[in-house]
Every structure is written in C-alpha cells, then in structure tokens.
Image (tube, rainbow, N blue to C red; front, side, top):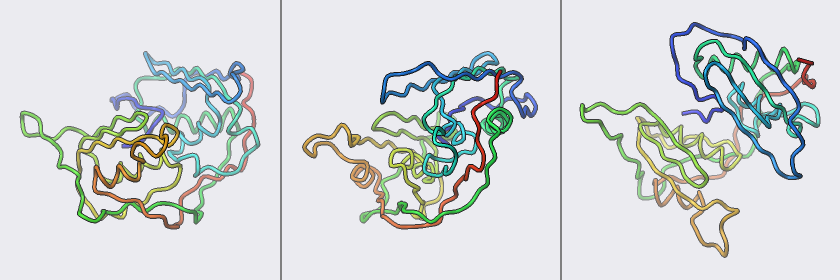
Length: 240
C-alpha cells in the first residue's frame, strides 16, 4: 500500500510518460487558514484543484511532507488547479513519471535526493505480542489482494505487510516510521483512534495507545537517516 494521490487501475495501455495536454492556473482565493484539495481521474482526464507545488512533489516522488526540503517560500502555500488529458489508464508508477515530467516542464523543477538524520519512530512488537490477524481467504481459498481504506481516525487493511501500517502512521504523525517488528507476511487489521484535535479531557485513545491495544504494536522514539528530496530549483508555472 502506498498512500497515493493517484489511485488508478493498471491496464495494458503501454508506458505513457507525459500528459497529452495540461493546463495549470492559480486556484481562486480561499478563506484564510482554509485549504481545499480535490482530485478526480475519469475518462482520460485528471482534474485537480488546490494543489501546492510541494504536494505535487510529494506525490510525484512518493515521499511525505517532512521529506521535502528547500524551494521558494510559496512552495507549500500557492495553490494551483490542473486539468490534464491522459492516454489510457496508467499505473501509479506511470502517473508519478508523468507528474515528474509535468513539474520539470512547467515548474522547471530540479531536485536531488539525499539522506538526513532526523527524529522518527520505530514500530516494534509490544509486550504481550502482536495482535495482527492472518488474511481471510475467499470462498475459493484465495487471499484477497492487498488494500487499505483510510479515514479520519481509522485504518482498515486487508492482506498487507506491516510496512503498510508504518507508512499509514507516517501520514498521521508527520514523522518517519521504521518497521522494526520483524514480522513477515501479510495481515488483516483495523485500527481506530481519536485524533488529537478531537480529544477533550484526555478522552479517547491516541494513535499510540490504539496501536498497542488493538494491534499489539508500539512506537518508540529514535533517530535515523531518512530519504529526502531537496528542491534545487522551482519556478511558478509557465503560461498555458
């Protein structure tokens, strides 16, 4: 599982490397402190609204917010609307390649990859052992393909490795999570917690507590080298 902006089906449509046509315009002004993001991919068209360059870089290079550094002051604030024509139904990897090409062509993006030691969490098995369950099989005895649904305060996964849980927790905590459980194979799991902003007077389980009580896993603070994307050049997009 990867928490992707581009969740599209893999079909035998060749290897597209660029959008056929793409228009990019600054998003209309929004209320202070409010950011509205939307995306749809349908019938060969991608429509995106409220996308910052930083968010696009995260999606194009499959990294998190904390893994993108450098760039101009507007990288994470100026929002854009994008309409692009797609040839066929590209895979997630093809969509990343196409977005990388779009960023290079229209935003003149130049990056390099590096590593930086930073605070992170190690995901380990809690005292008492793991509570993860083996994947359920269908009527024919086959296991379902890995999938995860995510919403505010919950993850629900089927047939996924522990690394998928680590990636999902990264989204919530905004910090790298390293799988040090030693658990192999694939699992079904359901995790529910109360987001910090919704907890009052200590009521409701934090994600830390929920991981331990529901999945038998624990987060430990540590430091480790983390892959990062360094933005060397980024300009406001060229005219359509």
